[in-house]
Amino acid sequence: MISFTLAKTLQSATGRLDLQVAADIEEGSFVTLFGASGAGKTTILRMLAGLAAPDGGSIVAGGDTWYDAARRVDLPPQQRATGFVFQDYALFPNLSVRDNVGYATQKSERAWVDELLEMTGLSELQHRLPATLSGGQKQRVALARAVARKPKLLLLDEPLSALDTAMRAQLQDDLLRLHRRLGLTTLMVTHDLGEVFKLSQRVLRLEDGRIAQSGTAAEVFLQRRFAGKLTVHAQVLAIRQEEVVQVVSLLIGQDIVEVIASGDETAGLREGDPVSVSAKAFSPLLFRQG
Image (cartoon, rainbow, N blue to C red; front, side, top):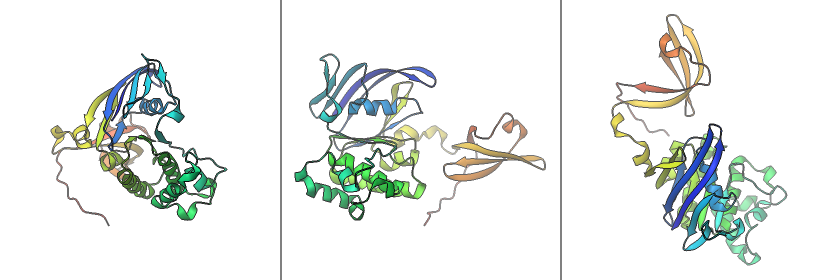
C-alpha cells in the first residue's frame, strides 16, 4: 500500500492553487490522476518521487516512510523506490539503449536487463544511441529504465502524449502487459480518456486542488443522467458560409467532423475555440473496425 497526504501551494496560470490531496494506492493497482491542466497532477508525481518538496503531509510506501513533515523525514529521490517516466523521455544521449536501461542496476543484474530488453522489444536495438530511435522506441527505453530499479511505485507523466495514434495504442498494450507481468504499482497522469478507460483500475479526478472523485473510470466519467443524449467536446477548425447555413469543421479526438450550425450558434466563435456538441435524439449504430 502507498499512502500519501500532501499539501503544497502552487502558482498556476489561473492564480494561486492550494493543493490538498490524500489517497491510498493498493499494491499492484494501476491508478490514473486526471484533471485539467494546472490542477497539480505532475506536482503530485514529483512530490512522491522526491523531486519537489511538499509544504506538509506524509508519504508511506509499504511501511517505509519517505516523507513526514511532522517528523522531519524527507528521503532524497535515490532512496525512494520509484521509477519515473517523463513525457520527454529524459534519456542519456551518450549512452546506448542497454546502458540507459541498466543505468540504475548493478553489474550482477545483467540477466535482469536482458529480460527487460526482451520484454520491451529492445533487444535488437540495445547497442544504438537514443538519437537513432523513433519516439515509440525512446519511450520503451524510458519505461524499461524506470522499471529496472524494481520500484515500489512506477510514476508516468503523460508518457505517450507525444506519439501518434497507432503507436500510442501499441504502447498502451505494452505498458499494460508489463504492469501485469511484473506486478507493478503504477500511478499515471494523462489527458486521454481512451487511455484512462483502457489502462486504469481506478481514477483520481483532481479539481480545484482536491480529489473530487475516486472510482473506476466508468464511475467517474459515465454519467447516467445523460442517457439517450450524446455530448462530446471538440475544437473549432474552420467556419464557412454555404448558401443559407454555416458549416463548422470540428476536431473531435483525431477525427474531423462537419456540422451545420445557425448564425446564433456560431456568433462569437473563432478558430481554435473549444466547444461542446450535443445530439438530443441519438440512436447510434456501432461497427467494429478492422
